[in-house]
Length: 149
Image (cartoon, rainbow, N blue to C red; front, side, top):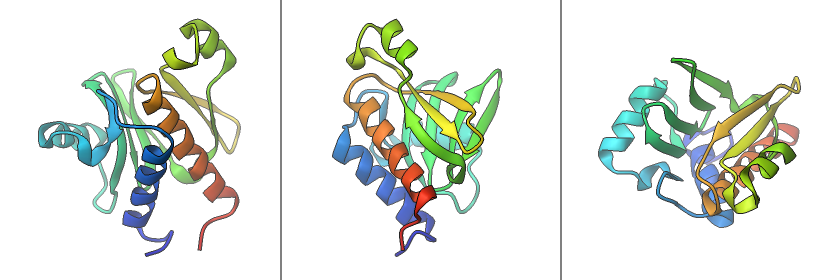
């Protein structure tokens, strides 16, 4: 397997999530969700045929996020928005989100920074699940600077 393989990318994203975080109630490796939630998420996200789900947040049909082998997908103003993983330059927690939440363990947003410096907040579960998503997306940003073999 290699970077060109969607299954490899999804596996590595899940591995990084688990290595630096952990499954929570609403945010976890995709395969750890029930089959019903998996079906709901793949339908909401309108997955492409060759995309492989990796990590997701699911609270309800208005609060969810899915990282696949190719994109980050989330609901936005009544529709579905997405960003190719190839556009991720960085992942961070903004100081204003940290202050508003009242501490690192309570933050529920990871902000993705695109190659053109647009900031895209995605909702995740606070605590170890957030840490996992944050670090998985930092790994993706590193791939964009220096793709793995």
